[in-house]
Image 1 (cartoon, rainbow, N blue to C red):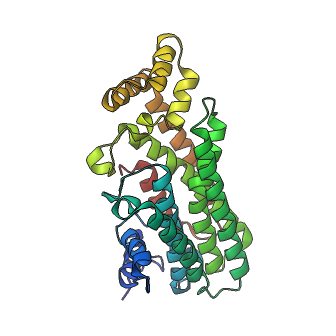
Image 2 (cartoon, rainbow, N blue to C red):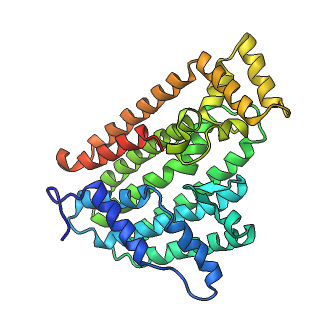
Image 3 (cartoon, rainbow, N blue to C red):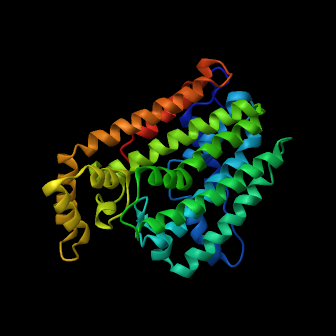
Length: 331
C-alpha cells in the first residue's frame, strides 16, 4: 500500500513508482536489436527528475496520480531519446557510468533506436485520459521542438567566439529547463489545475531548470569525478560555451585574458594541463562564486512562482525539497 503524507507522495516514493514501472515494462518486439538499446538506456538509471515532476505536480491537485504515470514515463522516454542523439553529437563515450549506446552498439543503431524512443513517447501519452488532453499534447509538442532548437543553438555556439550570457541562458532554457517546466505543467493539467496554476508551475520549473543546468556546468569544473559520474573538465577540454567560460571571457583582463585566449586556441596542450590552467583562471576571477550566486538568484525566482500556486503550503514541501536537491546536488 502506498504511503502518503497528507495525500502527498514523497520524492522517494514517486521515484520508486517510476523505477518499478520501467523495470517491469520491457519495450520491444522484433527486431530486438532496435529495442535492446532502448531498454538498456531506460534501465541504466538516472534521477527520474522529469517523470517525478509530472507526478508531483499532478499530486498537488489530485490524490489520484495513476492517470499521470504513462505520460510521466513518456516524458522520461523522450528525455532519454535526446541523450542518445546528444551523445553521438558530443562524441560522448560514457553515460551514467556505462558505455553510451553508440559506443556499445554503433551510431546507426543509436540514431534509429532514438527515433523509435521518440515515437514510443507519444504512445505513452496517448494512454492519458484527461479533458485537458489536447492542451497536454500541445505542451509536449512545443517542448519537443524547443529542445531541438536548444541543441541547434548549442552546436552553433561551438563555432562562435562571442556568445553572450543572455544567449547562453536562452540556449539552456530551450535545451534543458523547458522540459522540466513542461513536466510540471503537464502533471498539473492532468491533476485538474487551472490555467493560472499550471503556468505558475511552468515558470517555477523553467527557473529551476536554468539553475539545474548551471549546477551541471559548475560540477563539470568543481565536481568529484567519482561522484559526478563522468570525467571532470569535459567542457573545458572541448572549449564548450558554458556560463562559466562566458563570464570568464567577459571579466578577464590583462594576463588573465591573454592566458585564457591562448588556452582556448592551443592545440598542443594536454587535456589535464588545459583543465587545470583554465580552472586557475576561473579561480582568479571568482567564477565559482559568480555561478553559485546566479544559481541562488534563479532558485529564489523559482520559489516566488511556486509560492503563488493556489494550494496549501504544506503540499508544496516536497517540490521545494526537490528544487533544493537539484541545485545543491553533486552528481
